[in-house]
Amino acid sequence: NGPLADAVKGLDVTLQTDIDKAMIDCDGTPNKSKMGANAILGVSLAVAKAGAAASGEPLYRHLAALAGNASPNVLPVPCLNVINGGSHAGNKLPFQEFMILPTGAATFEDAMAVGCEVYHTLKDVIKAKYGQDAINVGDEGGFAPNIGTIYEGLDLLMDGIDKAGYAG
Image (cartoon, rainbow, N blue to C red; front, side, top):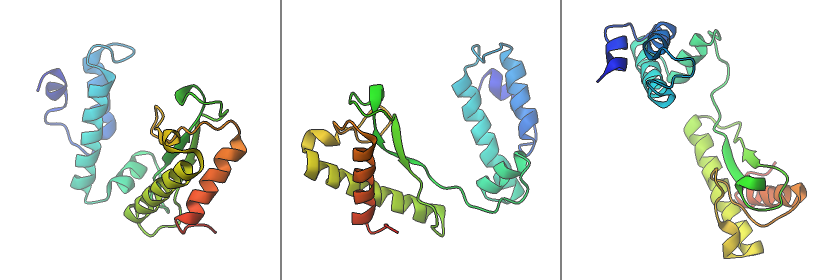
């Protein structure tokens, strides 16, 4: 409903660039401040999903084709922020984020399950070593233990991966 709906109504959902341009033109500002970048992004993502459905392909293949990669040879891999540092976490860790990417899984769902298992096992590892307060979550979703070196973060991460059964 509203100006964005009017701008895209009747357009072919497989023509993502045309729809995105129509919304940007409707907004008319250099930084999408009239309609709002979040509103435009939300419609754009919905159009991408509809375009994939209309094309009869998974969303990742549709997005790859839009990006000029007509034959993606790998599935997308979830990236999980597991340990936060610096100003986002209130500790002395010089890295802002430690992330894991569970590669090698047969499906995205399997990769996500591996990531979740490691995340929850890491929580247990951190709690056992540093106590209940250490499993507070930082601004961006990772744990924020009061550690000060990159090596401590890596050791915790490797221990969590190992205890979850995914080392090697």
